[in-house]
Image (cartoon, rainbow, N blue to C red; front, top):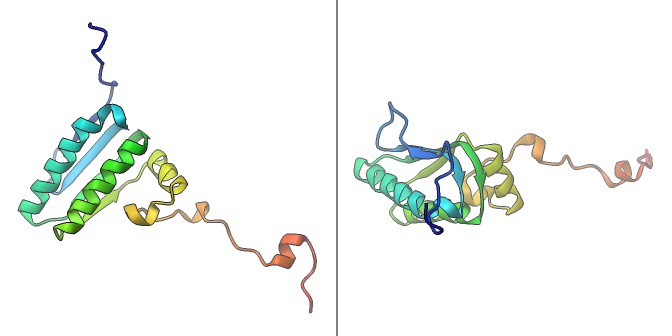
Amino acid sequence: MSADAREEPAGTAAAAPPEAGPGELAIEGDLTIYRALDLKEVLLGALRAAGAARVELRIDLGRVAEIDSAGVQLLMLVKHLAASHGQIVRLTAVSPAVRAVAEVLCLEEELGIAREEAAIPASRPADEASGQAAPT
């Protein structure tokens, strides 16, 4: 193997599920800079196919093990291109890795990822937080 050759990480793929229609895509493995070029082509191809079939594109992220800023940029690119053409892209089965990065970057709304109830801190009255009893 040459010094500049790179092996694809094991267990990574982007494909439509076997019974899927033109508006379904599942990404498995890493959604990182190392796969960005290949995944960009897959995502844009899936967006074109969904547009031609006049259906929304549903991207299953349930098996994404790792995501970095390049992966986030790809998801945002697809969502913005879809919106500019009147298409809908939905991210489904969002993995913990994707959810965590979206939360850290405050991009849940932008990406259409619902916040988990457990991740939203409950608000407490100031008196309760300080340990003082509320006036009666």
